[in-house]
Length: 167
Image (cartoon, rainbow, N blue to C red; front, side):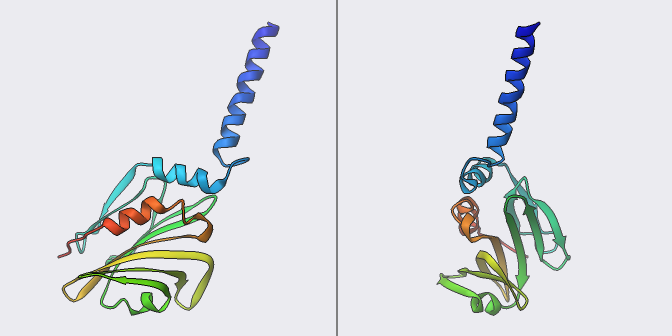
């Protein structure tokens, strides 16, 4: 009976330790979050109005779909993470808040400090790919805490390879 109680106690301590380490306690939370993003399955979302596809990690949840080509997916945990898509006629507002712009043939890559309206979100950055299609721009953005930039490198890579075709 004592050995059974000892085994149960050891098992409980091990389970608590694994759970404790997994949630980031005692470990670099940037590396833990990077592991979670890199190992998560990706969900494909298709915009019903413009028929373009994006991917986002399966731990994120839909937050907004205003039926005009703007969609948002969020994660609020140890850090905030947001994936957003829009269909717009101008990308000037994105360029105004940027500190890096790379122009290619029919697309623009933009990085900068994140603002929503006139409000600046302290410690938040964004990475956007905007693709020109006809008279419109289709954007795919990830918004993240500055200290987690290394953690979202998979999302940035997915965005950089994105090549939507809209109707």
